[in-house]
Image 1 (cartoon, rainbow, N blue to C red):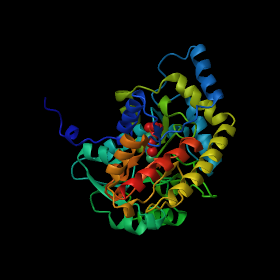
Image 2 (cartoon, helix red, strand yellow; image 1 turned 30 degrees about the horizontal axis):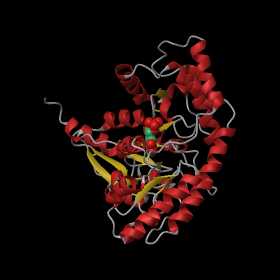
Image 3 (cartoon, protein in one colour; image 1 turned 180 degrees about the vertical axis):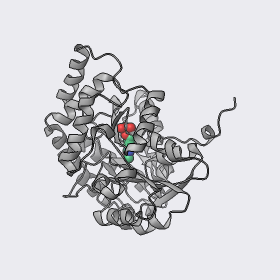
Image 4 (cartoon, protein in one colour; image 1 turned 60 degrees about the horizontal axis):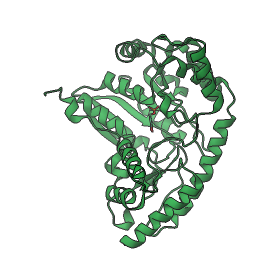
Length: 390
Ligand code: PLP
């Protein structure tokens, strides 16, 4: 059956295939350690779960406004003000079913044949997949280990063409754990001054997952680009709510109504109880988040130390998110083959770097959203595998 050309180009996120395979191997009795999928291994904090149950008991069973319940949009605005001292009108906040939906909407809005869209490489695979779906030209912005896995503003700006319509940035970053320093963001914003026709989508979904005193510089804090900035954020990672399918975006005035109409056409609204849960997440105690972050930090140090103890493997300490991106090029192994063998032969699920872009060759991604004990066992198995294959 013939479908539109975009469906021949659409890609996917291999982490979901690895998750399914890991599940199948576990069902066959293998002792699988999952460092593949990017989701906290913690439960959603109890008071958030209770708020959803209460919303159901209170009868919140119907459609909500397509843009989200007003209390939640106001709470998002308040949270952004508290954390970044920025003014965000709740009328610019859209509640969406997952952070992914913001990237889908923004890329659909700007992508078409003849348009160029810049995106990070290595980066979240859906950026490129969606760009290709629209027929726009994907232009990878290199994210290099020697830059601490942050983009170089000079390099990014040099990739802009007259056809550039949208630039996607992501910090703290998946899959490398890099955090873009303020100086690079300043230089990017300054460099875009003479191209007011280019929109920017800033994926800040890991904005609270920072270590070693790193600061998060939100692109919201640059007034000169606010009229063309789309902010992607949500609850999935910070509040361990990946399965709730919930996120939010901030849109400039003239794009907001288009994004709202897309919502009306495609999903109507986010399920009501999840929105009340999100409200409790933002307005309730934050100690569960802080506890998770402390544990992620301990695991981060552990996994980096253990990886650096393996022959021919080196891993710079990630500054944000919950991923380690060790360089395995000195092993002489291909990254995807290594990731596949690690799962099939040792039961350790990881993701090969090439699943995040061409510059991902020579790396694998380990999500350290797993217990310290499992991290120790997983890296030990990796060490045995490498010893056997060298
Ligand atoms: N952006 C980045 C960089 C991510 O890593 C992810 C999830 O892995 C998302 C967005 C999507 O988040 P959500 O689960 O809320 O759709």
